[in-house]
Amino acid sequence: MPQLQSRIRGIRKVRILLAAMCLTLFAACTPQTQLLMALLPEGTIPILLGHLQKVDDTNRQRIAEYEQRRDWAGLAKFAEENVAKDRSNSSWWLVAGYAHAQHRQHARAIECFQEAVRLEPDVPEAWNLLAQTYRDSGRPERAVQVLENALTILREAPVTVYLLGESYTDLRRNDRAANAYRQAIQLDGGFVEAWAGLGRAYARLGRISDARDVARTLEKSAPQYAEMINREIAAAGGSR
Image 1 (cartoon, helix red, strand yellow):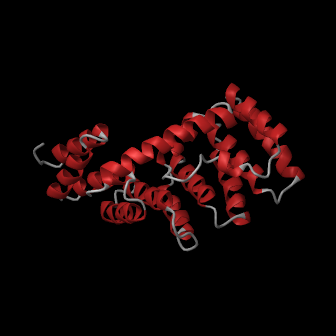
Image 2: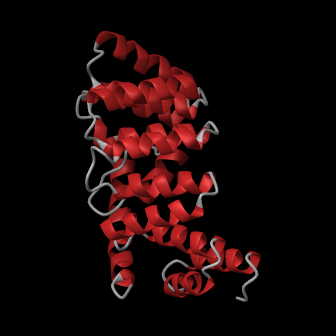
Image 3: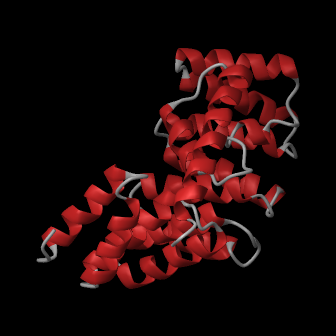
């Protein structure tokens, strides 16, 4: 873990740049976009901004206006109209899925993300959003299946592996969650959320010494995660 601190500093700079991009190009990021953006490793642009290459500037502005108003029903209708015009355009499927997910229409969101995956199976973001929608709808076992399928196709996909860890955590499979978090860290040694997940998994597995090591590493750079791990250690019967 000796290079973790410097990697975290670098990632923070990238996230500041990503936030500026989001404000400039997409007008307003929703909480879901912000959350997913916070999980993105260095060199990856925000979910929607990275997948609107097949949408012209006029329609980008329309999407931004719907999102500014938080008009998810309107955005879903607009996206579905464009899906009907061009069913081979994965960007519109992704936007439609995003809108339906924000509107808590999980079944339709899943259908849209599945189609985006079918059209572009080598793009991790569509897989990630599909899996996250299964998690949001209370079906972590399906999220696990989606992510494991994704990882037979994808290679360098630390967020996908991290979400696999989160899905196993939902299922209280802390042993498998720990394995996934470790794999995510192998792909991106500065992935702070994966370190936090690993520390939590260690605490729940009774590996208190390992959990403490992770918490100490995160104390200065990510104190909120260190505190979370310490709470897990206390809950597991270990001293802080």
